[in-house]
Length: 491
Image: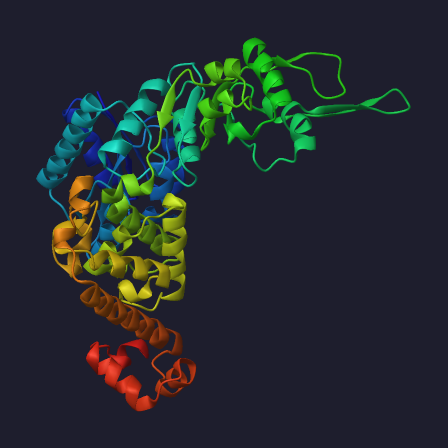
């Protein structure tokens, strides 16, 4: 039996949907305002939420991010009047399951409810329940991690998250907490790499300072604040050996002594840790305690880098651009096919964090554009894309990302990856002659330079000539050669 929530200020529609839910053997509740609906959603676990867009106290789309962050992550069906299809499309790109356009018949409402409840049932049967908390992607590697997190979430053992910087370790830690039996308790995150060594003990354990009058002042540490919840130690490999020894005792006894105090304090917390370091290697070099490592690694989840899940880049890109559009109350912007291909060509050493920083920069500086294209990308990414495209066609990518469909409908495109054996990359018979390769490289570099130059100069020929040291006639010749439209950059 599923729980269905309807947030709609029309009592007739709310009553109808509740009756339909009951007819299908499920529980239905409704709220006539956004505030009341969100209050109900926070208190109970709903499987499906039917959400109106225009409500007396706000826009339903604004509540979508909060609904997606609930522990049970309900499926959301948008209810919209005619003329709101753009907003509904934006909502679906941001995670809504579907939308119903008003006016709708009873049969249409029933069909949508049957479909979403069937989808929900099949989803729960095939995958453990886990609120994703903005963890975006459908690749095998990220799906495996989500399933691992779901399996361990409601257990009481410690969880260790391993992955490069920017892979989303804190998001996974929060998802484990919010899907655990401690979800109503605090989630305390500690970045072990940024706390000054002299302050680590007082930050974690708190302090008790005695004054000359015999009184004392107590400052509660983060471990005490985590009582009843989850303590997340980010970059745990940065802790000193002395503090590792103290932490081991805390994990064994769940008691600790604040700095300056003679009394033990209890704290019942669940530990989740993360690191981008090889702790086994640190143990071998004597920089990490082996007994502590055993305690931390009761259950380990290894998060993939972005270059290991490049098929998720289109979905991540659409998700973040849609989030930026919603936050800035701006219409959605189209994304070209070659823009996506250029993103996939980059190695992304900073992982998802780097990707989102780049996308935010593009959204902010080119908000007037109707479509994002490769020229809007930073030069380093466009250079990587150009170099990538110049490899022989039969082996031009270690992971080849193929985005199917047309440029105007990228949101519906699918991705496919093809892994080529290392031996194929070393087959020199397929490589062009050095002269040909050099000429192609120079042409690519010239084109990239000119596109970047005119974007910087906003199409001003005189300014471009002054910066580049070329004559106006030479610039016009190069624009014609590479089919670069000067007028585009001045719009």
